Amino acid sequence: MPLGKSKEEKVLDEIRGILDEASENIQSGENLKAMYKYRQAIRFLVDKEEVVSQDPKTFSKIYLKIGKGFYNSDEHDQAIEAFELALDLDPKNISAWLNKAMTYVSMNEMNEYALLCLNEALKLDPSNQKALLNKANVLRILGRKDEAYKTYEKLMEENPANVKHIHKMVKRTPDDPGLWHLEAKYFEIVGKDDKVAKAYEKVLELDPDDEVALKKLAELRPHDSLFVTQKAEKLIEEGKEDEAKNLLKKSLANDPENMDIIDYLLRIDDNDIEVLRMKAELLEKKGERPRALKTYKTIHELDTSDITYYNKALEMNPKNKPLLYRKGDALYNSGKFRGALETYNKLVELGENDIDLWHNKGACLYQLGEYKKAIDAFDKVLEEDKDELVAWLSKGAAHFQLGDYQDAMEAFNEVVKREADTPSAWYYKAKIAAKQGNIKLLKPLLTRAIKLNEDYLEEAKEDEAFDGIRDEPVFQEIVS
Image (cartoon, rainbow, N blue to C red; front, side, top):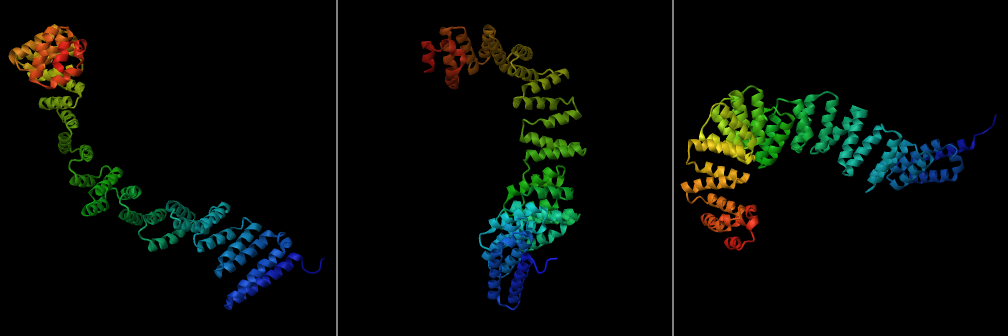
């Protein structure tokens, strides 16, 4: 059995003695002597490198202890040196990484280096709570708040009790909505819904546009719009009406059947068609048909192309002729000619036979390019009133589109026979003359049309009806 101590044991005994002396110096307030001893310890270990390398983990811990001694005496540069020596021996020494990180935090402008050290520690132990806390704090110092909040969340997932760190920060920085989000998440974890709601209310107080908070509050209090309307009211008082509307609409997106918010929005802007439609649909869903119809009617008055009012009213009374007339006119005026035609046909099926109906039907057919059917409709008008100028004009235009120039000319002659100064009739007659190549007749017809309406001078220059005679001197003379 060997006698005496091994080289390693001798080295350990000596280094422990040096460190004990350093501790005694610190306890007695002799910091300079303590620093001397720590530096002596490093020189000694470096000199005994051959022995130290035989047990890297043990001596890594000793370097860690030396580094802590330097750190506690604010000798940061030498602390970093000691921690690096510890990590050279054992790169998996998590405590060395953590202490090195915190030393960098204590040094000005060294937080990026601290973050690197903390990330190394978390590679070794992703759940290390001390590393997570310090990383979150460093990220926050660096202004990388979103990353910081995610790290705080991870910290609370590891142990909800870590929320105490969040509570402290909230007290120090109560105007940070991100911290209130973390508070809310904690209260969600422990099932305290009332405190969750209060935390999200605080978020909205700081950031009225926070969609997550709005959504969460809508889920927690689906029938309580008070918190939103109160905030909107405050914004309006501050002259921020658009912000108030955006807040209410975001809340409504999460709770689309909240009539309180709908009515509040309409008090701000009673012409908001989007909100009016939501109100009408909700009233209809609740079985309040008369109020729903009234709201749909308001929408139509604001946007005549929207015929929902007529559709809903006709569901209740499909044979309401006045409504059908108005629906057909609304569709025609919005350029929805097929729908208008179907509505007018419905009136014909119901026995309606007045001049306006057939004229409107003919106009739809004309717009849809169904010229022969349009002519039949205009003939229905003329059967009732031979002097109906618009019917003669429309019939002539339809014949012109079909290339029936003789029939078209006869229709326009009927117009000028009854009203000689009708410019559109003379212009169409001129177009027919151009199509037929009748230059002699073209001049007086087009001249008369332009004299009655100067706009036809410019129109004629572009009208394809005159393409065949555009280079004729007579035409050039008229339009020059």
